[in-house]
Image 1 (cartoon, one colour):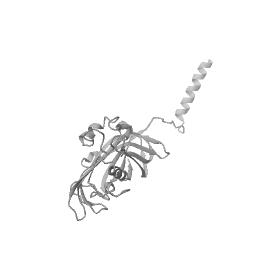
Image 2 (cartoon, one colour):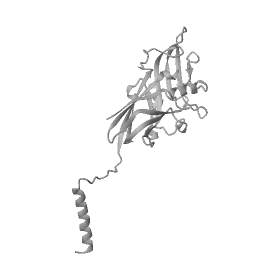
Image 3 (cartoon, one colour):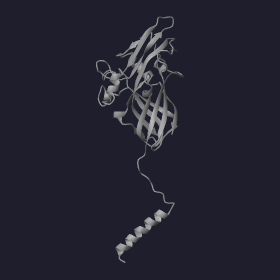
Image 4 (cartoon, one colour):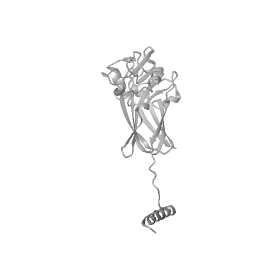
Length: 260
């Protein structure tokens, strides 16, 4: 028996022993991915928004009814328990939340690293690197059809919030708040970071759920107090738009995570 034959027999013996030994565990290094559904619940304090019929009161004692509520969520990043970040592909990371369209309030993210996550980051609006229309070709038709582009194509409306209001002891009128960036001079894009109320587990080939509340009462009453009687029509406004944008960035909270 020559040396080569002895080597072959040794290899066969090792393989045979490995197959017979139940204590030997093979390590699977195949990448694992799952899916995440993010459900946005638009509320005023604790009550779900009801368009056209719900009546609410802000801290300026103005009663208001909401006829339209839309906003852009973008640049979603999930933070793992070890601090590493999973960044969702930017080209596919622009979503329009429209209170009038229930299906738009669930954002589905696929092919997410299977892991344990403790935070979520996202933008409200479109960041300057993609302003006004660069790099978001997949999203432009949605924005245009939903009236989220300025009529002169200068860029995006990050939030459309419209309805009617009655100041205390005053006359009922309409309000229209269209908040966005205006060229490179006025940047109203905001980044939001939320700690998850419990760890979010993304498993391999599974779908997990994350719920986020958006309390639109904070558009009026948060870091700043804003009265519609002061100005009820805010669009290209270098004074009031930044005030409202700052408030908008505070209206989000996570409420529960349910892994499947």
